[in-house]
Amino acid sequence: MSSFSRFAAIAVATLLSIATSHAQDAISGVPRELLEDIATGSRVLADLGVVDAFGHVSARHPTNPKHFLMARSIAPAQVTANDIMEFDENGEPVDARNRAVFLERFIHAEVYKARPDVNAVVHTHSPGVVPFSVSRTPLRPLYHNAAFLGEGAPVWEIGKEFGVTDMLVRNNAIGKSLAAALGDKSVVLMRGHGDVTVGPVVQAAVFRAYYTDVNARLQAQAIGLGSDVTYLSAEEAAKADGVNMVIMDRAWALWKQKVTPAAK
Image (cartoon, rainbow, N blue to C red; front, side, top):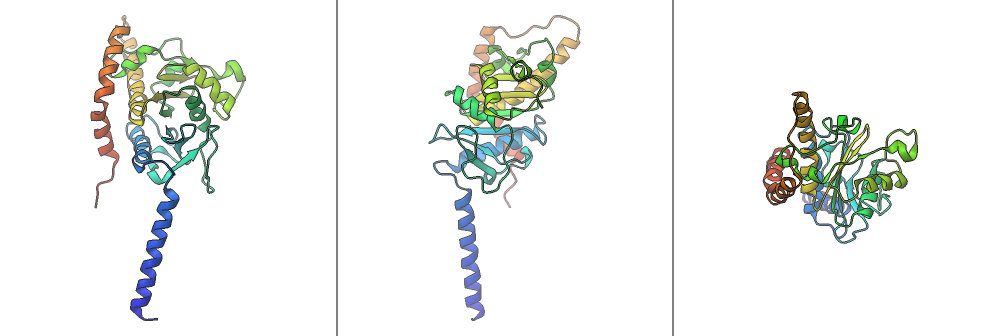
C-alpha cells in the first residue's frame, strides 16, 4: 500500500471514529444546546462555590417529558455536554453504557413527576443554606435577587418518614416525599443535607440555586447584627421575581462566559 493510500485509510478511520463518537453522544430528540446548558449550569455553580465535588443539574427531556437529562456521576466542574445521559421517569438510565450514575437521581425523577411546570432541577449542598435546614429560623428573602423565596422555603425532614438513614435520597419513595415537601415552591431545604431548586428552564433553576445560597449567607449576617431584620413583603417579592425572570439572561451570559473555555 502506498503512503498516500495509508494516509487516506487513516483519515477515513478517524472520521468514522469521530462520527461514531458524536452519534453515541447525541440523545434522540434533544438539541445540543440543551445538553450544553446542563453542562454549563453545573460548571457555573461550581465556579460560584455553590457546589463542589457533589451536586447535579438536570432538565426535562423536551420531546419525551416523562424522561429527564442529567450528567453521569462526575464532579460538577468537570461536566461537558458529552457527559449528559437520558433517564426514565423512575430515574433509571436509558442507555448506561457502563457509565456511573448519581445515587440521588431520584430527587429529579420524583420532582418531574410531581411538577409538570418544572423543566429543570438543581440539587446542591449549599454551605450557606445548610444552617437554615437545621435551625428554627426560616429562610426568607431580604433582597430582590432572592425574591422567589417569598413563596416560602420549606424544610424537608427525611427522618420523619424514613427514620435513621444515611441522609441520601436513594430511592423513589424518598424522592417522592421530598417532592411533596417542595409542593408548588421554587426551593426546598433538606435537613442536614442541602437544598433543591426548580425552574421552567435550566437558567432559572441555576439562578435560584445561587441566590438561595447568597440570601442565606446575607440573612445569617443580618441576624448577627442583633436587631430586627426587614424582609421583602409578599408583594415586593412577587414583583421583584417577575423582573428577575426577565433579566436573568444577563447573569447567565456572564456566568457562562467565565466557565466556557476560550476558542483556540
